Amino acid sequence: MSTRRSIMTALLGMGIFILVQFLFFPSPALSKETSGQHPDVLVVHSTENNELTEQQRKLDLLISHFTKEVRFTSAEDLASEDLQDITHLFYFGEEQTVLSEKTARLIDDFSGVKMILGNNENQFPHSYSFVKKNGHAIIENLTLRKTEETITLSEPHQIFNIDMESNAQTLISADKHPLLVKSHSNYYYADSEISLEDAILMGEVLHQVFEKEHKESHPAVIRLEDVNPRLDPEMLRQCADVLIEKDIPFMVAVTPVYKNPETGEEYHLTDAPDLLNILHDIEDQGASIILHGYTDQSGTGKTGDGFEFSEMERSELETRIEKGKKELIKMGLTPLALETPHYTISQDGYGAAANHFAKYLGQLQLTDDNWKVMMEAPYLTSPTYLKGMELIPETLRYVQEGEVHSIERMAERADNLMILRDSVLSAFYHPYLGPEGLEEVVEEIMTYPNVEWVDLKADASLTQGVADNEKSRDKEDLLLNGKVKQNSFLSLNLLWNPIIIGGCITILVILLSYALSLKIKKENE
Figure 1 (cartoon, one colour):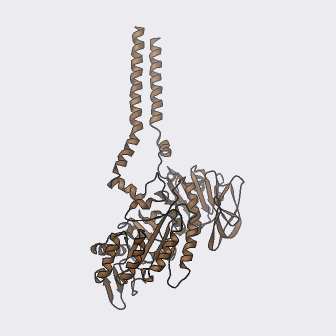
Figure 2 (cartoon, rainbow, N blue to C red; figure 1 turned 45 degrees about the vertical axis):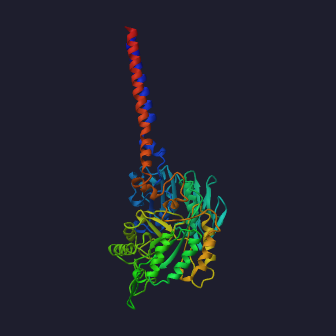
Figure 3 (cartoon, one colour; figure 1 turned 90 degrees about the vertical axis):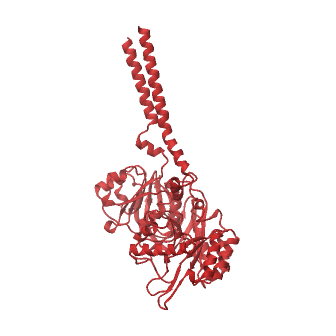
């Protein structure tokens, strides 16, 4: 009888021990689901030659607003281990092709959040039976169905015409045709291209896809452009004063060397002391200095007309960036970001730039084949090909000399961008045009609600539009180096607290079981 009681007591203790282990030491899979980590994204693509194209880089622009964990692989190379720990799977069928049975099965069976873009959705019968293609449709307008806000395309565009099952939901429509639809956790985008207008509405829907309730505010940026040693310093002073008097932080894109190979002219900032003094003054008053190339020219062209970085080897490009940066620092200025001349730079060049800067301004060149293939993101983002740099996009364009409708077109762009809860309103202005036009640009931007001016000198302002419980990439870096290092200690404590508590309870249960066993043994004696 005593032996039976001892065995029962031991089994009870073991059962409690196992229960405690389950409660306080969850499996790795459970930990990932409940840890609150950033989404882990895999993008699978079917493209010509299995290489990334500008379309996947556009998608990268959009996804990387929500997470740093984004990887790409071709459909031919997809393996089961690629899907391990993935929370979101995107398949971009840019080319119509027959997928291997293994690839189709892996994508079709993926149980996390999934989005298919373009072709080949019919090869996923288990998860995409709700989509039936029915030819093509020509469309001119896009509508976000949640708010019924509409964007008119710059030109008509062809999409896939699809019929859906009744349980599917249309999130974006194109005229009367479904464009982005959803059934359960599966999304389908009825096009194999992403336009800028698509990106604005898709960017809003991706907040739902990633379940991120980002703050509804709009980072605003104004940049004084093409400041070089030949600029009239009084023009810079007048334009800067407009912004300083309104207490608006702003950026100044500076090219440290003016060069005209045809005439032999070459001027450095030391040759323009009045301009340099003004740059020092306005930097002290809140302006952020941006490196805008070293000479902003190429070949026999003069500064301001060339494509300085467009066809350079990586080593040469990095040398030019380093020269420009050092020249500004030598002049007592602190460049905080890079803007390449005419936004041109190779894909490899972004990696070179990332060795010197954490921020990049403007639009992004999406392919080495044609510098004209560019696009900006509608919000702050860090696409994988920027190699860690954050993009501050240029979204509103600029005031063109002699173009009376420039500001009107800026307003049209801003109206479209306001559909997206955390879009960026960013414009640049040439000081030689005088302060009056700048006044108009600023007044136009300030008519929009929830505008918050970006100040590169205060990284906190770059996090506007990011959810309160998220950290910007710069803030994450500060965990290693700065004032919020204590948060990492707090995170460590939170990680170990369940383990410590579980261990203590386990020890307590064992001791109680042992005491109970001794008591029973004594009673039997």
